[in-house]
Image (cartoon, rainbow, N blue to C red; front, side, top):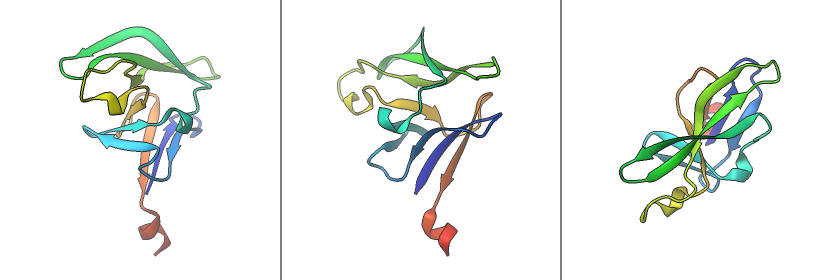
Length: 113
C-alpha cells in the first residue's frame, strides 16, 4: 500500500510511504516518519492546537515556489501526552484534499492485477 501526499498545484510529492513502517493511519489521518516527508516547501509554524488527550501540536504551512501559502496542511506533536508517544515528531497530514494538498492511497496489488 502506498500513501502519497502531493502539492495541489504542481503534483510534486510532499510525503510518500510504501508501507506501515513509515506511515501510520491514526484517527483517519496519516502520520509519516520525518524521513518520508520532503520539508523543502513546508514550514513548521508557531501556531498551535491543543488536543485534550494528545497534547499540543504545531501547524505546518505549505509555501510554494510560486509564492502561494496554504496554511495548516499538516501538523507535528513534539511532546505528546503519555500513551501517544508513537506520534512524537511524526508529520501528520489529512487523508483528504486540502487547500494545498491532494492525498492518494494506492493498493499495489489491486493496481497490478
